[in-house]
Length: 431
Image 1: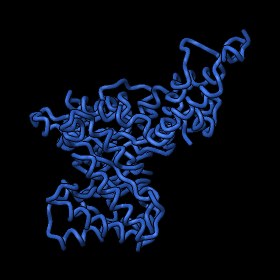
Image 2: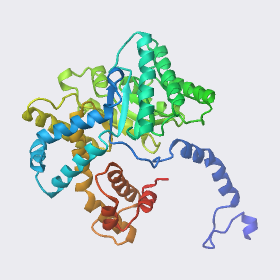
Image 3: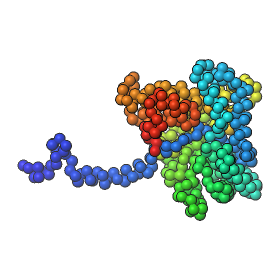
Image 4: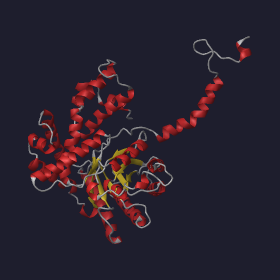
């Protein structure tokens, strides 16, 4: 019996294979899936992620706020950790060459760029005010931000947190956002690093509402579609688990229609909603870990980044009190970094020294090992660990994060890996 009579097809080896019709049918079947994957899971956006967000109440924000935070952070650093040995005692770590370099870099960072991401707060940190007062504050803060962008003193990322989309404060939040954006446009345009934050989200429809408002503003202002993007603050239990038993946060990311840039965990609101006693409300509570694990899985591959919360223990008082608060903060930041939460909140200028000390130590202590593994992967040289492309992405991403925040220099990375920035970007899957 011939091949034509049996309907058989010949594969690459000359044996029976798949027909062209079967292959076409598979392509047709999976075309919608391919499109869905590309749309919903575009991967890392390939841009810098700030290591923290600093929250400042709108009424406290002034033209010199960022410089003032830097001065206060430096004063605390010099007073309570003037030498690497003092910093080592404060953090409870070894006083070695690594910490000496970290100490040098932290001080330089506090002088050069103390704040990476600034959020002017019109929500909990500001509270309810008469409409005329909040109107004036929205205009005033936008004018100050525009001036700081113009004179080069603005941090790389900046924006506001408005009131939430619940009925009691919805109109007020929308009005503040409208005034703020309109004032920015009138004073030089929207800054490249503009970030908006939507707090206390409980239903995906609240995200949809903000998307529609932003799209409407863009049309009216002649802005490109999608220019305005925002973070979703996860601080309610309904954002993690909806009444239907589904993970609500995944629906919120979808509802953002590509405008969501981040998920920010709200330590104290979420803990309180779970009934956690005030003395035990912390970033490392099991309730917090569960919420952040759900956020992490929901955001994976979407390009939406994660931010941990904050500690409310302020490093002030005697040196012993400052050191105790610094050690707590340092350990919490290190814990977040190990769990792939590369950003967090800082609520006081004296938190900045330990933010950068923790971040810089994290990247510097792993530099040699990560660089060696990546170089071996690129050279196909093997070694003690046989890495796969996914691990190479993680290794190059780790090195790039260290570069972005100033923990390591490109010359160090190039000397250790033989790779330039473009090659690191490519290995990390950045655009």
